[in-house]
Amino acid sequence: MTSTKMIRLFQIWFPLFLLLLYIVVILIAPFLMSQDPLKINMDHRLAPMSREHILGTDHLGRDLLARILAGGQVTVGVSFLAVILILAISIPIGILSGFFGGWFDRFCMRTVDSLLAFPDFIVAVVLTGLLGPSLFHVMLAIIIAKCGSYIRVVRSIILVEKEKDYILMARTSGLRTMQIVKKHFFPHVIGNVIVLVTLDLGKIILMIASLSYIGLGAQPPVPEWGAMLNECKSYVHSAPHLMIFPGIAIMCTVLISNLVGDHLRDHFTLQNR
Amino acid sequence: MERIGQRFLEFALFFLILSFVSFLFIQLTPGDPVRQMLRVDEVAVTQEQIESLRNELKLDEPLHVQYWYWLKRFFAFDLGNSYMTNRPVVEELLTKFPTTLELALTSLLVMLMISIPLGTLAAVYKGKWIDHISRLFALIGSSIPSFWLGIVLIYIFAVHLNIFPTIGKGTWKHLVLPSLTLGIAMSAVYVRMIRSSLLEGFQKEYVKAARSRGIAETRIFFFHVFRSALIPLITLFGMSLGSLIGGTVIVEVLFSYPGIGKLVVDAIMRRDYPIIQGYVLFISLLVIVINILIDMSYLYLNPEIRLKKGERK
View 1 (cartoon, rainbow over the protein chains, first blue to last red):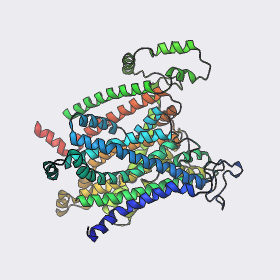
View 2 (cartoon, helix red, strand yellow):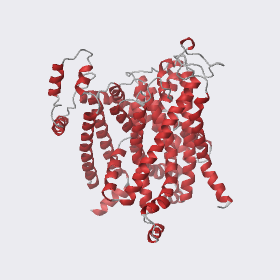
View 3 (tube, one colour):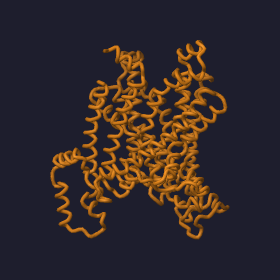
View 4 (cartoon, rainbow over the protein chains, first blue to last red):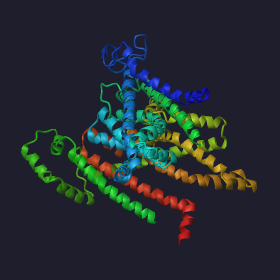
């Protein structure tokens, strides 16, 4: 690999690396906090920012900073897990559907079509509605709501790729189907899908926070950013810090993942041109 | 017309499958619906009451028979009664829907009022400060959770300035904050789309031709560029439908605005399955109807499609 190519690869993927680093930091940060995010202390309720409680305390006297960090672990952790599961489900199905075609393909596409006819937020709301409010159900619902479009993207990439000459070459040179999938299709799919998924990560975080905010996701006392905002709804007047910081936390995380997603998309569309 | 007919058939089939799935879902959900229904009154339930209601709902019959009864009632617009209020589901949905529609339309208006001028300015003054502002607006706007934006608006306009009420509905003032919240949240995406759609329009050959003929810039803009940009705008409207319906749910909960979004969230909290089911069917019908309308508007707006049709005759 030449050094210019290395630099280019670095340029493309470094922001993604930063995003992953950010996620890892969010996931381990709560372990570094001395305060317990669940510890109720009614003597210190709605305390303003101070040395002891850097961001103040909430209506039950719980430390807000500890809760925001713990909430990040929940919100970002669940989103990240959802993203990984979406990829784990949709890549194999998409490859199978595009590569083999036939009744399986038709069945998949019909299902995906009907799923995609609905706004994904509504699919998620209704599914959590039927399963019952809980964070796990929200994750499940988001996975189902989001999988459809990924399956379709993966399938369309495969459909284009499998007609290309190099696949024919690989076939005639005796490569088995599994090997073709592993060596040729998978690397091709994964790059495109990572771009998409980074663009979607922000939306998924927003979706989890929104669903928790309207009471369908994380249930108290679990610290989740959306649920925290829901809990402090009645204190907008007396303790505005309770609504400012979780909101900023959501916004920053989504902003970062959107920026990285945009960056990756720009690079990939440039490459394709 | 052929295409629309075909789509209609597709949707009808899809709707039938959906009705079966949503019927099945309710059958499969944990908990006994009879107990759910009787529980709402919070009084002791006798076995007798349970049996009589079970009989009334035909819950003892096999599944396909139940589905048949359900379908028959469905076509008579009878989706059962809400567990919460004991009123018919259809009635509940239809009385709440205009409220949601009101919110959706005013939000769309806000969205257009923000995104069309900002998108146009960003396209006309590409690379200037207004373009950068629109980019910043889009970036931040798509990263802000809409419910948080709503809370911030409440904090500024209701708590501090005390201009607008925060909950309920009634006067036009009740609509301002909810539709601003939803409108701003949605416009972030559309500003960029309108900008790029217009920029593409400026590059077209006929625009260059018009310019070389010495036609005034404003005339070119309104008659050539903007008109052709209308078609993507309609696609946009179709795409915004999702965020609009989803957005109304959040905003209605946030502002305690009595529309169907609030209705369904309350129903979910209380496990009021008939309402949830009614909502699913209602929304899918809505999505289908709007999709068909959008298809039809393409036919009307896009001269290419219209002319091709003429050729075939």
